Amino acid sequence: MGIWPQTPTSLSTMVCNTAQQARALPEGETMMHFDLSIMIRRLPGDVFAFLRDKDKYPQEPGSPVLVLEQTTPGSPGVGTRYREVVQMLPFVRGEILSVITRFAPGERLEEDFEGAGMKGHLAYRFVPENGGTRLIQRQTVDTHGLLRVVEPVIRWALTRQLRKRLEVIKGVLESGWVVAEQA
Image 1 (cartoon, rainbow, N blue to C red):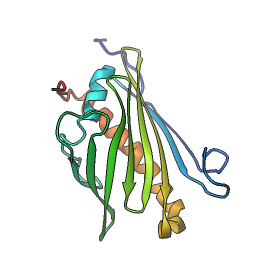
Image 2 (image 1 turned 180 degrees about the vertical axis):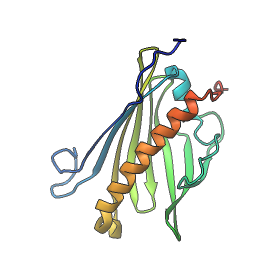
Image 3 (image 1 turned 90 degrees about the vertical axis):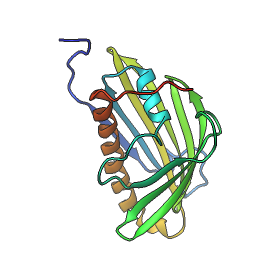
């Protein structure tokens, strides 16, 4: 059986978008909320390190992320900033800037992001479970301007993309990806 118990691949997702579920928003406004989790047969520190070093690994073919770079010097931590260029539509690219707001190795990693007509918050929790890690992702996204008109389409596309991204992370880590120690 090896060191990893045989468990089925699991990915659970909850998407909500109501004013009641969007805390601290003015009346009548909504925000997209995404709650996802996946079991990964790697230790929490390994999963954390992989996401901590998100700018260091190549993007999968077909990924909407065209560029991902750390824009502040030094090792990642609270205050570290990133720049992403993403393919939003066939001929439309957008830039997203993010900053780490919480950094607790092996436990939590959070960031705020803004750009491409959106702003939001991304939070990861790394929960030890059955010798591996339950990666929990909570994300909020608020659209601005003309994007509000197509928000249902954005919600659908983001739900698919976030699920796919967690499956890719799981696949890469479980295939034996070597994570680096932080300097």
